[in-house]
Each structure stands twice: as structure tokens, then as C-alpha cells.
Length: 183
Image 1 (cartoon, rainbow, N blue to C red):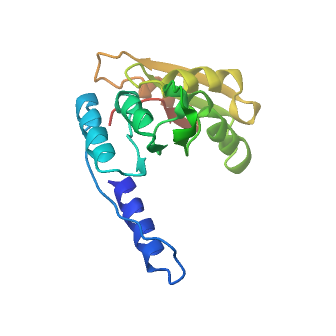
Image 2: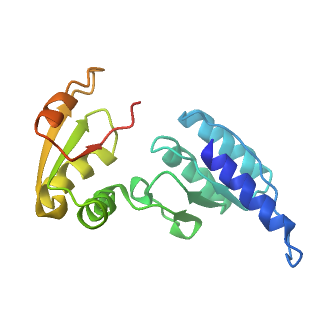
């Protein structure tokens, strides 16, 4: 939803400029995180002659749609997914505007070292968290914020019990980093 609002605002602001040499139009298709729907959206957009797409926005849907966009030479701009989740034989059509999954710990460690320095950090390792989980779980203990300590507290992939927060709090963590995507 936030991506759609951002795209609508950008199109509105671009089209409102007096000096613009072209107008933008925005089409929306919610793939609901489903690979088949992402391919359906890609067919719809490529058949319509769309020049570029924002998305797809999950690690499941982006690889499903990529071949269709590659074949049509339609630019694919990834907002929520790092391009390290994809293999592309035509990287000229692919752009990512966020860091790769393997580098997600870096800005958090920097923030917790420089802006809000902490000595004790806990990482809640949601094993169902997808590709960003391992990068955060290994990144924090290897380079703990503010040269402090990091403890890791796993939550099983098949569990909805987030009791791992209890030992994180008992260890008096000054910052807690959640490596998952489950609400």
C-alpha cells in the first residue's frame, strides 16, 4: 500500500510540472504475493506495452515475473526486494533501490553504533523470516554495534510462540532486532 501511495504521488508530481516533456500513467495490479498472479501481471503489462514496472515486491513474485519482463525488455524496478534474490541474463532491465539481503545488517549496526549507541543487542531469529534473517543473524554477532555484545534468540519456523523475546529482555538488551517478516 505504501509503495502504491508513493508511486501515485510521484506520478502526480511529475505530471503537474509545466516543463515535463512526457506524461506518466500508473497501472496497479496486486499479485498478493503469489507467483502465478505475478506472471499474470507481467503478461498484462508487457502486452500493453508498458515501459517499466515497480515491483514485484516479494522474493517469491520477483523471480516468477522476471523472465517475462526480460523477454519484453520491460524495465523492472525492485522496491522491496534486493536484486541478489534474482538471477538475470539481462541486468540492463533490472534495478533495485534497496540494499541486497546480505547487506541489511550494515545500516542497523551503523545506527546502533553511531546514532543510538548500545552495548547489548539481541537478535530475534525468526526462522520463517525469509532471506533477510540469516544476514541479520550472522551480521550482528560478527560486528556487534558499538563494539558491544549480541545475543541471538531463535524462533522455530513452525512456531507462533515468540517467547524468545523473554531471554532477550532478561539479558537487558538495549536494542532488539527482529529478523523476520511475520507480524
